[in-house]
Length: 217
Image (cartoon, rainbow, N blue to C red; front, side):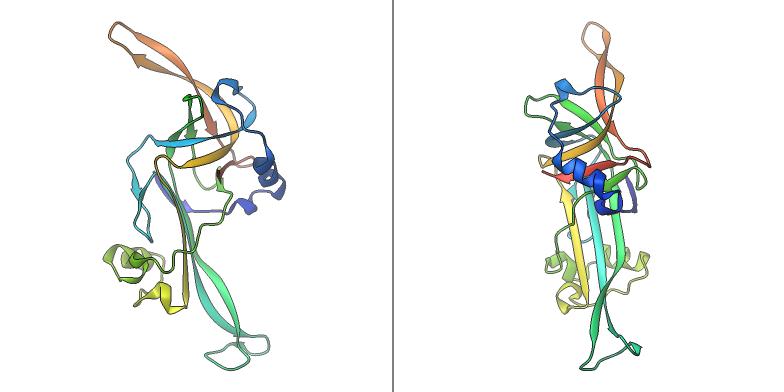
């Protein structure tokens, strides 16, 4: 599992995100190597579960953002206070965990998904606001360590104080998602009681120019 700076789905291309949202679902049995397809199904982990940074949820993978409030004035720049304040929310963290997992379609057939890394996998959704979650507001050591590693000073009740917004999406085993990307075929050796036999599997991957997109179904 990798943790890298994340990229919102809209940072891929608007056209590609539109294609992913409007593509017809293809079952595993109809996947063709060398083409692009959309598969919707149930997430099954391949690797150990990871812990999300804000709500500290055990999950297959997560996507998190943090925004800080800055008070600005059009004429005089940043102000401490004043009736003519304008507020801007500036992104301080945008990060996701990247994993390998299985997705099972309605027939029970599975395909492998390799999220790769930031350059080859984009999240085509906005994570929900979790600022009022208890783990965001109790100054626990895990959260404080994570925030300090990104140059952010932890504080009391950060989520409900109103100066910081926490967003996080956790994908759990059994969740239903969709993936859109290039299909590859590869073989693995399956060991049985009598002999080893090669089994062909399909895998979704991304590339820098045509990244894999993860959508919430």
